[in-house]
Every structure is written in structure tokens, then in C-alpha cells.
Image 1 (tube, rainbow, N blue to C red):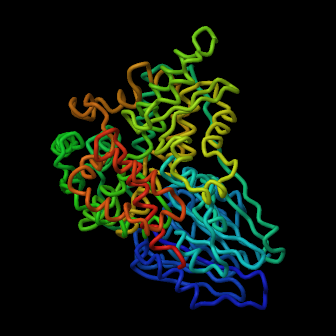
Image 2 (image 1 turned 60 degrees about the vertical axis):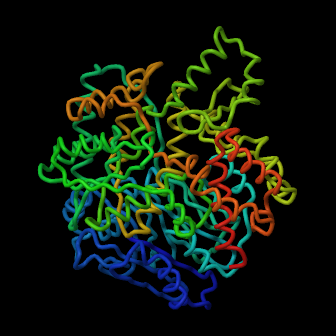
Image 3 (image 1 turned 30 degrees about the vertical axis):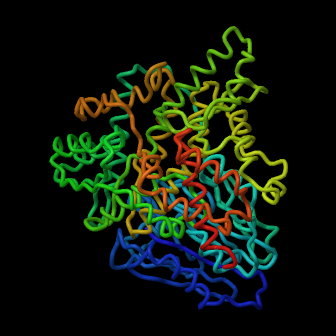
Amino acid sequence: MCGIAGKINFDINNSADPVLIKKMTDLITHRGPDSEGFYIYKNVGMGFRRLSIIDLNTGDQPISDASGNVTITFNGEIYNYLELKKTLVSKGYSFRTTTDTEVIVNLYLEYGKDCVKYLRGMFAFVIYDKRNNCVFGARDRFGIKPFYYSLNNNEFIWGSELKCVKAGSGQKLNMDYSALDEFFTYGYIGLDKSVFKEVRKLKPAHCFTLDINKGAQSLEINSYWNINYEPDYSKTENEWIELLDQKFSESIKMHMISDVPLGAFLSGGIDSSGVVAFMNKVSPGQVKTFSIGFKEEKFNELQYAREVAEKYKTEHHELILEPESVELLPRLVSAFDEPFADSSAIPTYYVSKFAREFVTVVLSGDGGDELFAGYNNYMKALSVKNSLFSNGIFNPFWNILHRTLPSNVSGKGLSYFLSKKRSDLGAYFCVMKKNERSSLFNDRTLYGIGSYSSEADRIQMLNCSSSKDFVSRLEELDLLNYLPGDILTKVDRTSMQNSLETRVPLLDHEFAELSFKIPPELKMNNNEGKLIFKKMLSKYLPENVMKHKKQGFGVPISIWFKDDLKTYVNDRLLNKNALIYDHLNYSAVSKIISDQNFGMRDFSGQIWAILFLEEWLKQNINT
């Protein structure tokens, strides 16, 4: 696991600046504290920070092929690299290291840009090909690893974090107001946007090519993999369970490849518990597990984590969080580089910091809800859809319901939105509904947003889905948006801030492709989700873990804001000189805080989002 950064000047006479490249990589030393490396050739500069995981002695980057014509900087892990290496050796390729990075270089020489299709793992990389003066790069299928870039007529800049691109840019960066609208809609900035107009994200499952001789206009971005739901009804439920067991075992075994200490996050939920169980299955022995809890019992799942730890005799470690953890906010803002409203980043940061005291690599259970219809909102959405469209007749009561439905209901803090064009119901995490955002934003922000609608992106994706099944369309929507934009971003930034590599075995693409073939009725019924995955895990996990109600990785900020942190919120947000009021209305913010204090509704999610934006502006305004 590492961090990458680089800059290419399109003017051949404008040589790459090694001091600037080092400055960019120094900003992400936390992603790679063990070593650094650079490649400077004419107008091309590439930088690298390394967290040593595999091939501790000869795995430093950048790495070039034997001729020195093809050079790579790579962030991630390729879990099938030994298999790929064997194939490449049979084709005549030689290797000077035992790292997975060199495998990508030779794959590129053999297959060109199709090399990415052979990779099984998490990755973001850039290859400079001196032979034709071009660059090729790619991001993994689910967006586990980040990739930011900026392109204009003078330069192409990239980095594992936005701060790298910002430092390397020779231009003023301006806020993207459509991204701000998306932030207050969903709590994160996803897809290919960033908070700045001039900086983009490479989408998951996409690669790019750039001809340096031709400049910015030559950039081509293409998808190399797609989510495709094709239910296979030829197999019995037991056959599917056996296939899932086999493929999950294979994925776990591959994800445990490491030359440094390794452990697992254990929340007490089904997914992380399943990961721990299978780690013990494929590699018997003492697994190190790490759990985090709260003194507020409603949010505490430690008892279930303990049951799994006891069953598999893990070396188990626990940490209890207290309200003062919100003092972490400035560090979180620095880690995320752009507004991010998921407050579960707090416990994720602390469990990462805690785990790093014992291990360098952990496995997590992220992805199970998206692959196997585990979110409660899928059932709620299906129920609402069925009631609204019984006999094919639209219920006009929906319009009234939508206007009055609170932004925060049980589960993920849901709001429902209806696309009348195809009668599709899209369920999504919602910080603030459109009318609430309109009241929150000041005239300057509303002008910047213009006619853009964050909801329209999701509706279009639902409408463009090739799946015939409603729940599968919702799964796909989350796999394309919520998973990379929120969940994986949260895990990457918080763990890498602590120099901890987090691996996600449920998001092995071969395991995911198997889940896409499972008939949807085997995943979810009207009362329960993740059915077949639970049945597969039932013989491995304690009964209490299997049956307890899904809690998620929530944070009791609603309690904290009312009591311990009320003064903190008032001091930061009820100051009329606060930076947020360049973009938000003071009256709207003060009403949200007042309503929270008087218990009108739970506005803790909105308050956290506004707090995060205020701190982000403090760190980024005029810098």
C-alpha cells in the first residue's frame, strides 16, 4: 500500500521540477512512511511513498521494465500476482523483484491497456511509456483505491489524495457548487467530481490514456468492467451456498498474502464476523481482531464481536469511544481533503489507529450489504414501491408523503425519491432534501448550483440500469455511488492516515460477479436481506451474531450534540463570522441548531455536515 503523485508539463521545454514532486509526495507520507522514490525524465515527474507490505527488500518504486522504457508508480495490492507472474515467465519475461508492481509493468508490455483486465485486487497506478511518450493509468473496479487528477492545456497532475494535486497545480482552484450540493444531499462528493472544478476523480473500473505530444485534448477515459446482473436459475440454493463458500474462501486466502503482521476489523456484524471466521478457516491459528464500542448501549455491538473472538480464539482488542472524540475533526478534514459528512469516520479512524499499534494490514467486511441486499432501505423501498404501484396505478398520496417525510428515518437516514418517468423508486442516503438545501444555501451558492440537481444523477443511473429487477437496480446504484463515494473513501482515508492497509475481500471482483448471478429472491424477501449470504455463514458464526438486529457502524452524535458537545457546536457555528456564511444562510443554520437543542428532530447529521464544511473552509480558504 502506497501513495502516488506526479505532474507532466506539456511543454517539452518546461522540465519536471523534482522539488515540487517531492513536495507533493511529502504531503502523503502517512500513506507510505517506509520509503520514497522518484522518476524524473524531461517534462515527466513521478513520485512515490511506500508502506512496505510485500517484498520488503526489493519492492521500492518507481519500477521500470528491463529496458527502462516503461515505468510505473502503483498504489494497492494485486492478489493474483504470483499466478500472473508464472504466466509471464512462461512468455519469456524476467523479473528483478518479487513484488506485484513489476508484474503490472510486464503485463502492460504484453497486453497494453488490456493489462488491467487481468488484475485481481485494489489499485490505482500510472505508467509512463517512453517509447511513444504517453501515460496509461487505471483505478480498481470498485474504487477501493483513490485517484485524483487535474488537466488543462499546460499540465496533467495526479495523486492519491486531492492535496497532492492542489500542491502541484499552477492554477487557482475554484469551488464546484454542484459538488457542494451533492455533499449536502448525500454526505459525500462522489462519481468523478471533487470539491474543486479543476480537479476530478477517475471513476472506479476506468482507465485512461494520454498522448503527451498531443496534450490535454488527447485524454481518453474508458470503462474496462461493468456491473452486470444476470440471474442464473439453473442452480439450487444449496449449490449457490457451496459456490459462495468456495469463492469466499479463495478470496480470503488471497487477501491474507502479506510479509507483515495482519489482522481484521470486527464490528460484531455479519460481514466482518464472516471475514474473521473464514480467515481462521483458511489459515488456522490466532487472528488479531480489533473492535470499537460506545458507552451508549444502543450503538454498542461489542458483545457480538466478543462472541466471534471467543469462538475463534482470536487475539482480541477493544476500545471505547467518548464524546471528546469530535476533537478529531481538524485531522479528519485534513485526511479527507474535501467535505465528508459520514460521522462513522470517527470510530473508523480510531479503530485504524488502534489496530496500527499491532498490525500493518487489516481485512474489513465492507461490501456485503451492497452485494447481497443487506440494507434495510432496500426492503422499505420495495414495500413503498409495491404499495404505490399496485395494479399499475400511481398513488397520488406519494407527493404529499415525499414533501412531509423527515430526512432522518430509521436505517441509513433515508429519504425516498420517485422518478415518474419509469416509475422507479430510488432509495439513497440523504443529509438534506432539496427544499431544505434551498433554504440552507445563500444566493451566491444557489446561483453557482444553477439548474443542477444532485438527485438527477441517481435517477439517470437507475433508469440506465440494464437489470430488470428493482432491488438489483438499487444494489447497483449503491455499488456505483455510496460504496466508493462514502464507505470506501472513509476506510481508505482513515486507515491510511494511520499508515494501515485495509483490504476488502468481499469486493474481490470474481466473488462479486458470482453474487450478480444469484437470483434476487435468494438475497432478500419482504422481511430480511442478505438471506443466502447468512445461510452460507450460519455454520461458522454464533447464533446471537446471526440473529441480532443490524446496527451498522453508527455514532451517537445526536446524544453528544445535545449534551457534551452543545457548547462546541454553538461556538463554531453560531458565530456570524464563520466561513460557512460565504455559502450558507445564518438563519437556516441557527434554526437547525435550535431545533436540535429543543428535540424537534434529530439534526445531528446536518450539524456534522456543516461543522465539517466550516473546518474544511478554514483549512482551505485562500491556501
